Length: 162
View 1: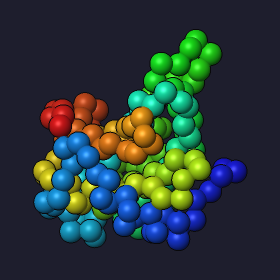
View 2 (view 1 turned 45 degrees about the vertical axis):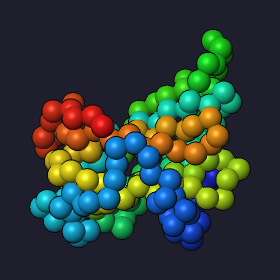
View 3 (view 1 turned 90 degrees about the vertical axis):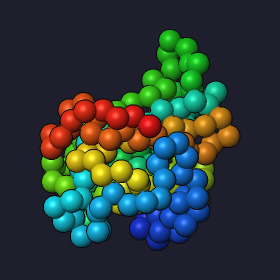
View 4 (view 1 turned 90 degrees about the horizontal axis):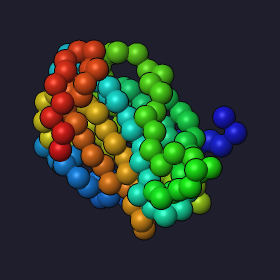
């Protein structure tokens, strides 16, 4: 991957990103104790969407139990893009196994030094799996949408969207 995100940049963005959580994800804990124990959930689905009028590039890192399990750069077209524009939403190809654990998602838009960190252990609820959607807003912030036990969850299943 040509573009890379340093661990230091991700950690620096964590504090600012934690306050940017929106949608149904909130504080409260899902029973995960951060050590990847039996009650820790699986990050089953990760979607990205762009509600802005301009194309965006998202640098994405997913960690499980402190280990990198996914790193990519995703380009999304504008919300009302033309026929030649990139899609405004995508499902991230899951490069991690079905092992549960303490998952953290780090996302940063191109040209921004700060990003968003979503720690699944801080979300309320106690699902077997989480489906997460990161939506880029018109002003370049992130909204976070969650689904408990989404369709296709290999260790549960159901689909309670918030």
